[in-house]
Image (cartoon, rainbow, N blue to C red; front, side):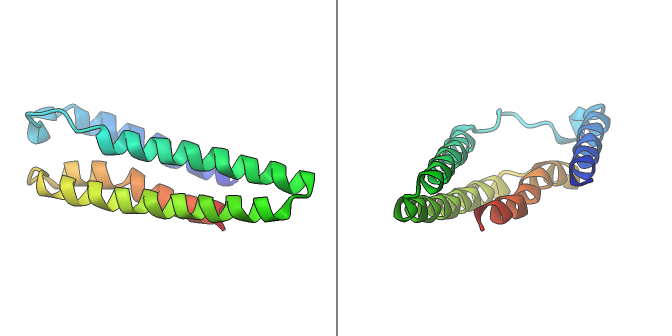
Length: 122
């Protein structure tokens, strides 16, 4: 049931993106968005997933101290991710156009993923 709810949410987000995209002149920007911090966050999330998978493997082998280390590293990487995301929000907030439509489109998907990250981390 949770998967169906998440899928419905993303279908709604994509539909709203398509619907709002028909009037692109309203919130067009002159420069493309910066991807540096987004790529850094992607690397952090992929690396933290790899560390957690390594920790699961250590539990199966019976090396619990290394598994605890993996959990601590994963939580630390999650905190670094949140710090980088805060920096990205602060920088992006300065360059937002006055339209609330663009603000909703930028800030809706990312905070939605934070509770899942916290649930996964703990």
